[in-house]
Image (cartoon, rainbow, N blue to C red):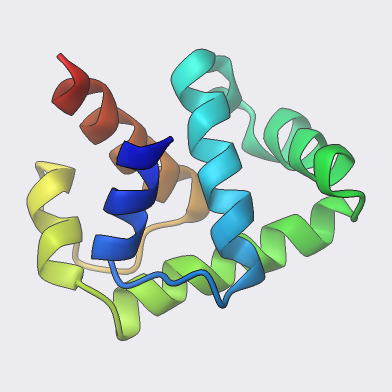
Amino acid sequence: MRDIQKLVRSLGIGGNYQGYRYLLYALSLCLQNEDYLLSVSKLLYPEIAHTYQTSASSVERNLRTVVSVCWERGNRPLLESISLCPLSSKPTIGEFLDILTEYLKDSAK
């Protein structure tokens, strides 16, 4: 979990966003089971919503916010360097989770 927090904070996403906690939990779930990356809306959001006693739409909105924060005010060069391909536009939540999950898996080796 410490590696996840370090990566997320280095991307410019602080703990003052509700989506920060959701993102940490989402990444830990995706690292355990990559099926969550295949069905973000149907599996991942409801699981996070259940854990934090909120709605799946709230989870999606807050995750969208932290992706935007990273893209617009955060460490975009770091995000682009770990994505391994050029990012011409802001990634979707699913793409963002995929980029970070793969990076965390590779760095754990």
